[in-house]
Image (tube, rainbow, N blue to C red; front, top):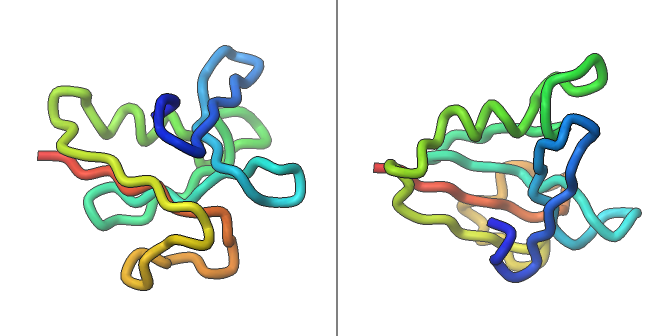
Length: 98
């Protein structure tokens, strides 16, 4: 994901990466992740008292060998059929597996 346009990685205290998109108040925000048409909310990179929905859950679910494709949409370019969280406004990362 880090090589895709508009995506940057934020590394948390445990060294785990969290893909971020441009946007939000700070200039970067956590997008909505959709894995095989299922919304996966993320609120941090790895489990901690303040992170209840870690990106590590998606990493465990999506094996590299099963990866079919990834689509990244900024907040302004999200197709209506993928706009599952219009209040967030950060964008969407869509992950397809075999």
